[in-house]
Each structure stands twice: as C-alpha cells, then as structure tokens.
Length: 424
Image 1 (cartoon, helix red, strand yellow):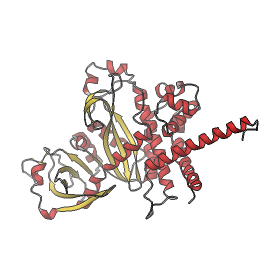
Image 2 (cartoon, one colour):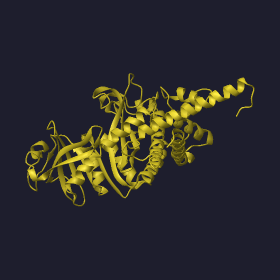
Image 3 (cartoon, helix red, strand yellow):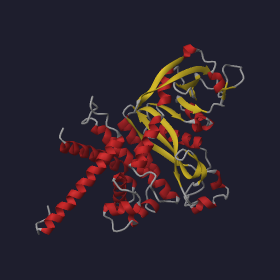
Image 4 (cartoon, one colour):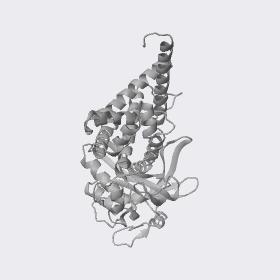
C-alpha cells in the first residue's frame, strides 16, 4: 500500500474513532460551547505538543487565550462521572463483553502540598515514597485490546485530619468518605458491573494492594465474580478445613511437582514471558461457596516467587488461572500511552473539579486512539514482515499526520496570499 493511501486510511479510522467518543459525550455538557471546548481539549491531548496543558492546547486549537479551557475544567456544568460511564460502555461495546477488569494505581510527583490528594506516599512511578498525587485506575482488557474505564483520586489520611476544612478548600462538593485503594476498587467494580457496560464475563485482577482488601473480595463474592489477586508472601491461608492458617510462601514449598507447569503469560519484546506455575486448593477465612486456590509463580531464571489468591463459583483449570494472572500487564501497557500520548500526567491543576475532569478527558483521548487502532488493524494486518499495529504506534502516526497536514495547509495559504491568489 502506498504511503499516501496508508495515511488516508489511518485518518479515516482516526476520524471514526474520535467521532464515536465525541458522540458518546455530546449531551453531557450544558451548552454547545462547552462541548466544543471539550472536543478541542481532547484533540489537543492527542496532538504532538511538547507540553499539554490549557495554555499549549488553547494555542494549538487557535483560541485567543486559555480561559475557555480553564473554565471547562473548573466551572463549566458537566459531570465527569457520567462521562466515565459513557466511555466504559463504549469500551465494552468495541472491545467485547468478555474480559478482565484490572486494578492498579499511578502517581504524579508533585512539589507543593495544595494539589488534591498530594502527600508523601509510595508511588510506583518513582518506586519509593515521594510527594505525589496517586490515582486508582480500572482497565478493561479483552483479546481485542484494553482501555481505561474508571478511576478515583486517592486521598491519604492526612487529608482528613482537619475535618472537611482541607477538602473544602480544595473544592470538594460535599462530605467525602475516607477510603482505601481496595475500597475504591470495590466501588469501581460495583459501577462497572451494575452500569450500562454490564459485561457478560469479567474476572478482576490486581496487585497486592487489592489482593489484601476484604472490601474488594466481599464485592466480588456478592456478584459471584471470579478473581485472581496478588498477595504478599506473609499472607496466611488455611491449607484445609480445620487447619491453622500458614504463610503462603511456606505453603508453596508443599505443592507437589505434578501440580506445576511452565506457561507463558504473553509475548515480550525478547520472546515469550515464561514462568513456572503451581497451585493448591486452600480454605479462605470467608465462608463462600466455590473453590479457593493459592497460585504461585516462579521465575525460571531467578527463582523469585509471586503469590495469588484465587476464587471462582465454579471449577477452573490451572491454565485458566495462569492466563488471568498474566493479563495484569495490560494496565502498564495502558498507562504508557495515556501518559505519553494523551497527556494524563501533564495537567497543571490543583482543585477538586480539574483534578477529576482532566483524567476523564484523557480517558476519552486514549479511547479514541484505541478505537482507531482496532479499525486500522483491518487495513494494516500483522504479517511476516510487519508487527501488529499498537495503540502507541497509532497515536504517533495520527499525531504526526495531523501536524504535517496542518503545516502543509498553512504553507499553501501563505503561498496563495503572497501571489494574491484566492485562498483554496
């Protein structure tokens, strides 16, 4: 296929994807100006700008000043929670209703103390305790791709030590309940399963933060949703009825050789990501019908172990549990493009409304790229010579295609003006 034809097809797919997102959000804004400003903001987040904030996006979009975009984030009448539901519904419609709901958090390093939720806390972004703002995310992942579908800004304990004063100063709309990240994941699970998305088959997974949360497990038990959640090595589970709880690292040593397999969790840049996996049935403290398992992952090179507590209302195979545990990597693959290409971490906002609204619009920008990628794959299939088209590659191609077309248009207008010819 010729380069010009490729660019044309990619732009057609991009137009289809972003218009699907804009259609989903069209009636959520009180007035057409706010909707048009939101469209400009989302398009700006997808543009090849060195920095993405209200000032740079407004200049890119041709606004006289950043005021319209500041107003959109701060005071315009619209509900970012409703937008999240719409985007989740669209993601399920396009990616499929059988998949995995993955929980994880991402942090933005901060220098001040006034941004909502900022405190000295651990963030995986830095790999240590830093002054940061942390957000808990949910990602919907299927065989067709993955997309961000919900989030909650995490509020550390010190934000509640002064009653509602500090949250009030930050613009909180009313009393705010203190919640752990596990409780936030439970709330997102409830919204996802009870909302319009309502997928037919969902299995949640997450790291130790979520595996140790009784609130999340109770929510999943209530919906009879299977789960595969990582736990720390000192987590205690009972190996059988009436037996005392034991550390999972001790239980792993007792798994017979016949209950171990070598299984890949996916294709990496340097080959299959293979591990040894073992399992044993255990008894959880919660008296719930259905089997509980301890799943153990062992590195084939270092011998390092990782542990998962699993439950399902029906029997499941070891291969099925391993596939679910390995799917958690999809959330890291979502964070990279949504930060790098959709400007998730480049906001310059502090109060309640902008802190909640910017991520919703970044979600919309990322979903537009996901939908574009799915449609473009029909025109650019994987071959022996070409790798599968990815979301980051699509975002890069679209951004630079739009930049080149904009520059070409400006140059053409300049040439026509210099020759006193009518503008094309």
